[in-house]
Image (cartoon, rainbow, N blue to C red; front, side, top):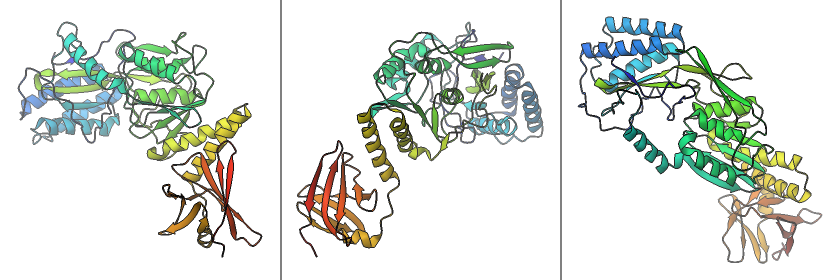
Length: 456
């Protein structure tokens, strides 16, 4: 047999693609140090051997037998008709095969790639060698297992950004530390906009912090064993649970695979609000198969996710957000949603005022009030030690020798400042609408008023 599987098939072991496999662009895999010489030209006979291995994998493993048969038939015809004769360069050949498979299956997880120096697998176990696993672990540690940022946003909103669902077996400690750091948050934003997927075990671990009771998260159907593997939240977690706070998940079109499972699960369980773009649409666990004699790597979905609530999955469609918005605007939008929810639900009046202040500030920056230009010009003047002036049609505020700040209208007489979230400026006018004072309003209720000193 010319191919070897790169993941364990033991019960309960499923690996979802950690890096988005984009069939239309064919990203290169990192080169290894295998023993085979780099192949620069493929003969027609070698193409045929590679395709025979592909057919065997599709026929025995691919989750949809009918699609496998259709794909094999089409590839055989193309090969017989000479459509691959000119594709002697391995990258070009594997990319074309991937494109042809995608045309039939529309499966973002299914693909063939040329990987110079591809490491051979352990011939006895059909699994990666200990040395290869150790090297992979070092690489993942260097990337902090994908956990990129922990932050406390204004209003005590927790923010977690991580870019891969590494296995809980190696990254569990990092995940647990992150969840415990977030434990005192009033709300939580989880940023998966750059997350390409990974392991269901990490989906299970992190999700377990969001429920008090054991909940059914997902089921995977495995074709070649005709079996099902179910995933539930864990009955025990280390540290406090975050089961009673609002959760917001940020997505983009790059959000893929296990990151989509996490999002899809929590959306269907009504445990999170999804903000951003529709995700990539990959719901199949993979076999990683190596046609090692040619440094060719094949990824074949061997199963499919079945959500216990929807009884389907997100394959090909992606996860549609509750609020569809450009990915680069999703964080600010989610913060406003979270603050708005907290204003309505919090029971402590002093907290409600804090959430309202921050929410209104962010809303003003996101969508400023449309101030009449004539009214804006009336506000120009000295309010010693404050002054208001205009540059290039934009109002600016300055106090003494301090830096100047662009004035963003919150209403026709009140302004906020991007770098002064604790401060607002309100222009007071007389009965004729003429400015007479500039009052500073501070978070917490303190004010100070400066009379206009250059009255016209």
